[in-house]
Length: 123
Image 1 (cartoon, rainbow, N blue to C red):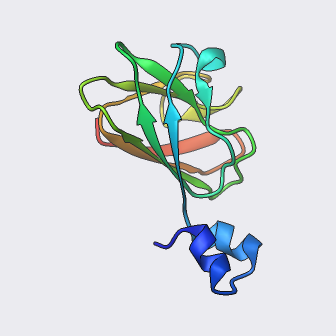
Image 2: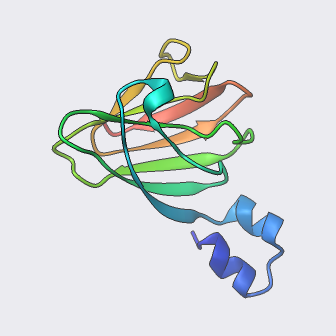
């Protein structure tokens, strides 16, 4: 799949490019709780390359994600797991509301309702 910026470069309208393309970003995970996790900005289809410090660190899914938005979490250092939290009041799969899932290698998360993210986790 193409990056959204490449699609706009060939004339695809920006709003369409955001829905069908991907954005790639790097993020350093931090903290170990939902409010202390590094927040992933912008919910449109994004691939996040996550670096973690020693011990589990956290990222939090974006509150502004729309139903159908996808976030791919790619853990750079696979010797340290990352915690992935939903935005406040949200749920990932069968985890408790506001609860994290542990991601060891990578996970694809898709926002399926206003408060629920479905996850395919490599564990």
